[in-house]
Every structure is written in C-alpha cells, then in structure tokens.
Amino acid sequence: MVALERTAAHAIGVRHPDRVVTERRLTRTAGMLKRIVARPALYVVLALWMVCTLGPYVVMALTSVTPEKQLIAYGMSRLPSHFSVQGYVDLFSTTPFVSYMTNSIITALSTVAFSLIVASAAAISLSRFRFRGRTTVLTALLIAQLFPAVLLVIPLSTMLQSAHLLDSRAGLVLVYVTFATPFATYLLKGFLDSLPRELDEAATVDGCTPMQMVRYILVPLLRPGLAAAGTYIFIFSWNEFLYALTFTSSTASQTIPVGLQFFIGDYQIRWDLLTAAGVIAAVPVLAGFMLVQRQLIGGLSAGAVKG
Image (cartoon, rainbow, N blue to C red; front, side):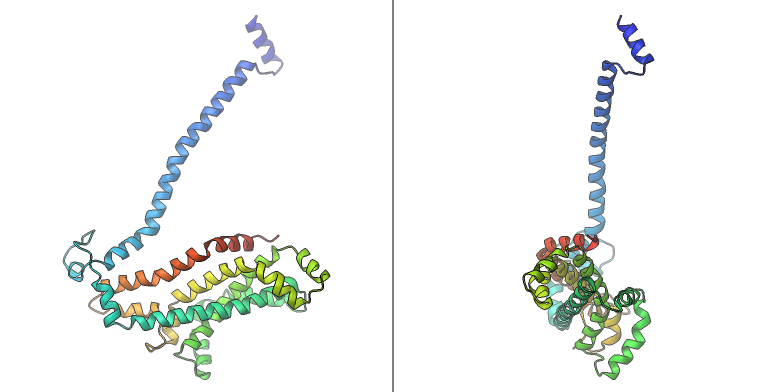
C-alpha cells in the first residue's frame, strides 16, 4: 500500500513527506558542513592577512630595539640578543629628528585646518546650492585629481620661488592644500548629498538664514565627514615625500619622510636610527585613527552612498 502511494505521488509530481524530510535533513547537514569548513578557512585567510599587514611593523619595532653591533654583524638573527634603546637615544641626541618631527606636525595640522575650511565651504556650495558653472567646477575638481604629481613639480616650484615661499613650511602647506582639497571636497560633497534636504527646508521655515542653516544644521552633521576627510589629509601630508624633497632643502623646513633618507648612506645604512624613527613616526597616525575611528567609519560609509 505504501509503495502504491509513493508511486502515485511520483506520477502526479507530488513528493512524499518522507522524501521531503530527508531532503531537508541533507540540506541542513550540507549547510552545517559548509559553515564548519568556511569558518576555519576564513580564520586562516584573516591570519595570513594580519601577518602580511602587521609583520613589517613588528620587524621594524624589533629592529629598533636591537643593538647596533648585532645589526651590522654577519648573518641574520630573528630576535635581538637583548633589548636596547640606544637607537632612540642616538636618534634624538645625534640627529635633527626633533626638527623633522616638529616640521611634520606643523605642516600636517596646518594642511588639515586650511584644507577642511576650503573643502567644507566648497562642498556645501556644490551640494546645497545651484548656480551657474556648478557642473564646470565639479568637472574641474575631478580633472585636477587625474594629473600625476610629478607633472606639477616645475610649475609649483616656479610659483613658490616667485612668491618667496620655496624652502619654507608655508610653501609646503600651500602645495599640500592644493592637492588635498579636491579629494576632500568630493568626499564631503558625497556626505552632504546623503543628508536629506528636508533639514534645510525646516531650518528655512524656522527663519534661519543660509549662513545660520550652514552653521547650526549642516556643520554639526558634517563632523563624521570632516573626520574622514581630515584623516585622509593628515596621512597624505604626513607621508608625502616627493614635494617635501623637492621644495625643501634645509633642516628648518624638512619633514620626517625627507629626514629618514639621510639615515641611508652610500656605504652604510643606520638601521637602528631608521627603524626607531619609523616607529615614532607611526605613533601619531595610529593615535589619530584611535581617536576618530568611529566618526571615520561613519563618514566614509555615508560619503560613499548618495541618498
């Protein structure tokens, strides 16, 4: 009788309940096996990615606390025989690293401040107001980011020399602002485009002028975008080497990326000084990320999607 029911169910295209239960069990088992296999594979991929990403930093940190005699000895050792901070002591006592650090901090913070002021004003104008030439400005900002950096070295050098800003922190800040502002403007504009325009209309109904609307409505909501743009600008100005090398020639204006190259000589490389300076140079960037990481994620995700 059961066989006749199964035959009839198969003939009319209806699956038997026992077969349905079996298929569900097989599907559940297959899904469980996929999860069991996929999770260790994901962990392996993440572990390899962490090793490739953090490995150079770990090697740099270990090298910075390795005695100089062990660094110049024949052969290679994975770990230092004993930890030594002599590299850090020599870095601050025998090199102008403090001057490089000061120049980098002043240049980076000044670039962030001026770039955010210009970029936020431009982004608010392009996002919230309609005026003649708006499309042309957006196209010009996009095209400005397509030029390679080396192409503008000679024109910028001529301009800075004519303005008596060559080999100065002010000239370097001006160059960095010129290159960082277009990208920051696009990032902030994308963030503002994701904010509903009903906020502007509500502020206008409440009697706010355009400047009050910008000050009390848009600027507070723009903080995550400002954090994201400011982080990008800081990293760009902190790590920039080509323009810092081209437009500075004295210790009074040279930044850390330029100063690090002097630890590499024709016949000897001071690995202890080089790695110690690299560890110290990475600290401000890591500290900045830890301070603005929440706003950074919100700003990048909101600015990447137009609402």
